[in-house]
Image 1 (spheres, rainbow, N blue to C red):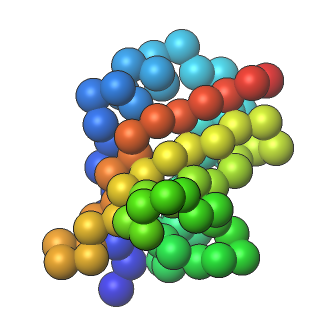
Image 2 (image 1 turned 90 degrees about the horizontal axis):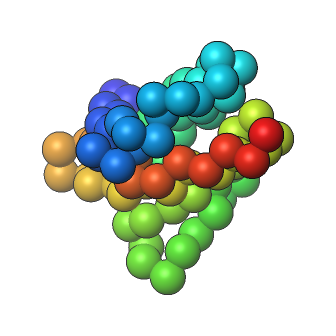
Length: 82
């Protein structure tokens, strides 16, 4: 069963002026992430085993927190350099 994705208030604010192509790339990446949030081939570790990062659209990075008990990932930061 896939995890559910939630957006933090910070991320909701960050996505307010996001370009459509960046948002599409973020959604596509998160669709993969929710299948296996700790995938070592698609995501990057941090100093915390429950916090991971994933690249999207070739110019973006999303940080998220994995919570295994309710099977959720919460997006905590999104950076788009495009």
